[in-house]
Amino acid sequence: MQTIDLGTTALRELNASLHAQAADTNQTAWEIVNPRGSHAVAVGLDAPIEVYVKGSTGYYTAGMNKQATVHVHGSAGPGVAENMISGTVIVDGDASQYAGATGHGGTLVIKGNASSRCGISMKGIDIVVHGNVGHMSAFMAQSGNLVVCGDAGEALGDSIYEARLFVRGSVKSLGADCIEKEMRPEHLEILRDLLERGGCDARPEEFRRYGSARQLYNFNIDNAY
Amino acid sequence: MCGIVGLFLKDSALEPQLGAMLTDMLVTMTDRGPDSAGIAIYGDDDGANTKLTVQSDQPDAAFADLDKTLSQALGAPVTLERRDTHAVLRLPRDKEMDAVRILRDAGEVRLMSAGSTLEIYKEVGLPKDVAARFDIASMAGTHGIGHTRMATESAVTTLGAHPFNTGADQCLVHNGSLSNHNSLRRKLQRMGVHIETQNDTEVGAAYLTWRMQNGASLGEALESALDDLDGFFTFVVGTKDGFGVVRDPIACKPAVMAETDQYVAFGSEYRALVNLPGIDEARVWEPEPATVYFWKHSDPQVPTGKAA
Image (cartoon, rainbow over all chains, first blue to last red; front, side, top):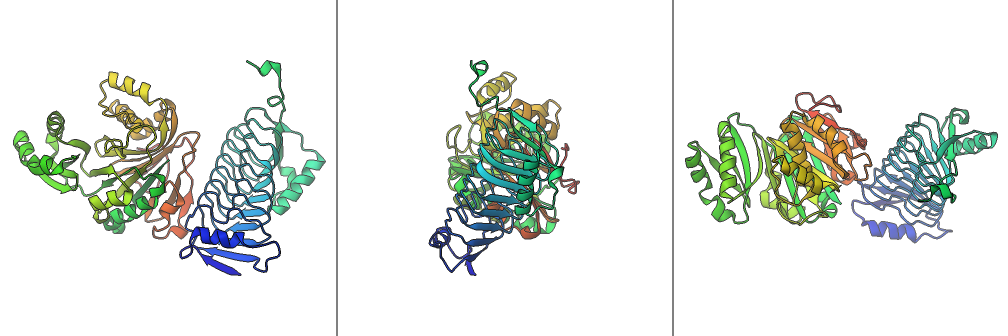
């Protein structure tokens, strides 16, 4: 395992070292110590490597991730795993606003709570939150799955296009065009897989499913001014 | 963007280090606001005097005989302690109203703050330079709030810098931008509220002052601010005995808090908190939107509530 100390190594040097890893690298495991809330830790990775961040981070941790597994042993600031394409990002603590925003693919697991706008404009990413999510989560979500084992804040799924939202606890309110939907056997199977990948011991049957009423994004003359 | 830091000490053993801890936190937030910086610090209370913190762009001339002339005008003892462009005047509490009127009429100095413990220091420039000019690191106190400004709504000036004084021993800092400040300024001015600049935060501060002058507690004033102020804000407020935080309902301006047995701390980012003692074991969380948080020295174990 390679260890990089952000107390003595510049952030750009760290990210350049991680970017230099090719698909067949032998250096598959990296440990980053002393992140001390730094921004943009382990962003733009594109290799099947594992990165363990020992502490809490600032903005945009593991943004634009491809292939890599980034595990934050602490909490993450705003925009963790923003625009992820593939791979896995795990946050042991809490995540701040817009976790997983615009993500196209991959899996984001947040073991604590996520704050507002979790999964905003998600485009195929799977997000599993062990705790609660804040207001406006899955705002304008287009594709993918958001699993919330705790409660969801106000305006869940506002202006949602397509994406599956699974919530175990309460939902403070649903946003425009977001409705509760029937949980069919195929959804239970999808959710079972998501919970397993997210390391949750919750049972799929405890969740409710929410999604788009499809009344807002199709052109409808009654919506025109 | 702007940066806010705040530190409310529960453990009096840390009081001599308050200025040094706040300075470190403030300098860390430089990239969030390099235009101007300021700090409000709650220091000693001698039990008899009011402290008026004043500022001048020509401090040599303005402060030369200020204590003597003010003392003669008031018929009471006045002391002056200068720190760069600022000075702290100490005078008997029953003379405060007269002193404020005399200083405003003379127009030689600007009043930064008034109160028995509060002192406010703020200037244009990088946080590290501003903190060094006033030697903030040497100051002791029970709690304090700092701000680094990236100006969006009005000019980069000393009076546009934060914190703002909202009443005796009260102050406010702001990250965000208010969108209804022009109409609210006109309303407040019609009701006789004194507002000096085109700055949005000064209007927010004047609004809280006005609400409290009309009988609201600070907690009530902050609750009504959620209804009457339009725009983005994370506010951190200080009172003689307390420290509060409130964010607008959208809550896009960042905020992180940490609490241990020794302190409650606020930072715009976690980076601002990393050098605090025991941070690895602290309870760290993001304050909820549209929720008033308040801590008081008289009851430091109640972390949130409608108090104040």
